[in-house]
Image 1 (tube, rainbow, N blue to C red):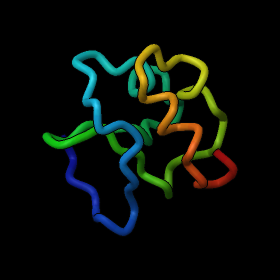
Image 2 (cartoon, one colour):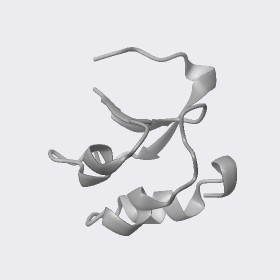
Image 3 (cartoon, helix red, strand yellow):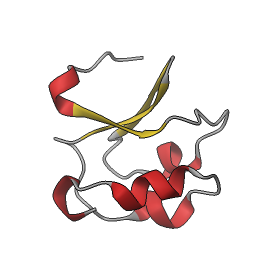
Length: 71
């Protein structure tokens, strides 16, 4: 697991799903897990919204609130 700087990440799902589908389908690998939550690297996010369409958890609510690059 790569640790990313706090300035470049935003928590998108505090639910910390065991098997985050959004993380698997992100084309730029911007979504990553840490012990406390699922996060997104805002520098890598291209606002394709694939994560929003695949999320099967309540995390999609958090994704709807994201404001990085149009999400």
